[in-house]
Image (tube, rainbow over all chains, first blue to last red; front, side):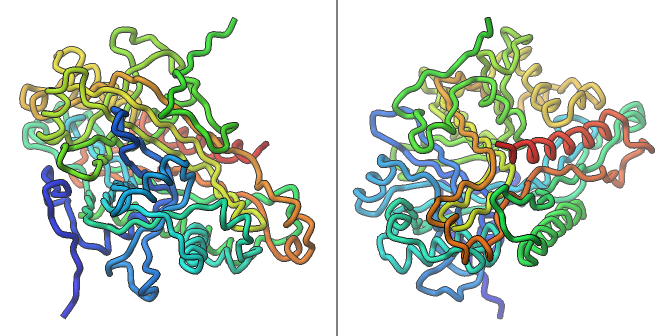
Amino acid sequence: MVRSFEYPKKQHNTVKRYNDRGTYELGPIHSVVNNSLVVHVSFAPNPDDAFPAILPMIGVMASYDHPSSSIDEPLDCYLHGYVSSRLMRLARDSEKGLPVCIAATKVDGVVLSLTPNSHSYNYRSAVLQGYARPVEDVKEKVWAMEQITNKVVPSRCQNSRWGPDNVEMTSTMILKVNIETGSGKIRHGEPHDEAKDLDREDVTSSTWTGVVPVYEMFGDPVAATTNKVKEVPAYISSYVKEATTSNQEQALEAIKE
Amino acid sequence: MVRSFEYPKKQHNTVKRYNDRGTYELGPIHSVVNNSLVVHVSFAPNPDDAFPAILPMIGVMASYDHPSSSIDEPLDCYLHGYVSSRLMRLARDSEKGLPVCIAATKVDGVVLSLTPNSHSYNYRSAVLQGYARPVEDVKEKVWAMEQITNKVVPSRCQNSRWGPDNVEMTSTMILKVNIETGSGKIRHGEPHDEAKDLDREDVTSSTWTGVVPVYEMFGDPVAATTNKVKEVPAYISSYVKEATTSNQEQALEAIKE
């Protein structure tokens, strides 16, 4: 039997449009977050402020209590970035934590059909909602900082001056979001044109249709002026190569129906 | 005299951390939105819903009333994507429009310093706040649809079956956001290490530091099964090439101090 965890469908996370593209499975949703360099985190700043706020942050799905959990099991979202005193106060003072919404989107291709109305992207998007609290426990905080750094470049912590000192510990804020619910949306495949356009020879003979693959490319590492290590270490060069190759493959794979 | 428009600094958009990275100039902020394939749009769905919502959408900064406005002049944000009946109702029914926050972030590089605490990204981010309303005027709506399509691939409208029919007009929703305020954040340059790490030979001799450039790559266009046009047209192939080259240059340029 294959276990497959899903987020509960609630009024606010139910995918209504193109609902065949919607997913509630934890695996695909968590993967989008962990493969995105940046997530966007939204919250309500103040009762007297009309607008929601959004902060770009680094997010990683992981479990401190069950560190061996796989990507398709229940996980928390740890967030790193600039946590303003306002955000800190809101996250600390509310009983359950601050209600936040976390979104990440990867574009895999530009889908060009016969008419702009049928144009689309191949993409994977994730939206999570949950309660954010600052991580106060020292061990959990150091563990979360390691997850965040090593998410960006695997094993970077172990290959740099790791072990935050007291100043670094107090100047860094990590938020832990207990996820209430989430949803994902995935579009892949070719352009889908309608008969009204496919049946017009004047249109089909003059309009190129297809997909332009889009992916995140990691270029050759450029050493800092102060760098003293001659060669780019293998854990960096192989990561750069593998991440680019895997992104490219994903963009090409997405074109298949 | 060089005119330079800036967004007003208000309590909710003032960049506090690393405020030398902050910008209120319209040009850089609008450019991030227009160079991002996806923006994330946040709004408060319901008074009884604890969480803000986020939708990934396509956004373009433009002015219908002053179409020749340049990127550093006052512009509106036109949004396309799935506008749920809930979002439509909220945007239509509120007197000033629905308060939304729009965010876009481009990562230009991964900045690897001697210690994880000083790690960073080279990036450009934009956050805009304003009031969203559905575009009801037919001419403005068609104009906005053209802006959105041609933002993704320049002159695509003119090279496909353009001119939305009645069904397409009614099934497509465009939101226009009157921007109240905005801010941007830009980080570029090399890793910035602290003396406490730079002075330790055991650290500098073992830790590679530098920047891994990151940029959005557009791959070779893949024709659809139903495509009847033999060659990829020049406006597509040159766009793919130029966009990738310009993204790559921007990532490398960002490394310079």
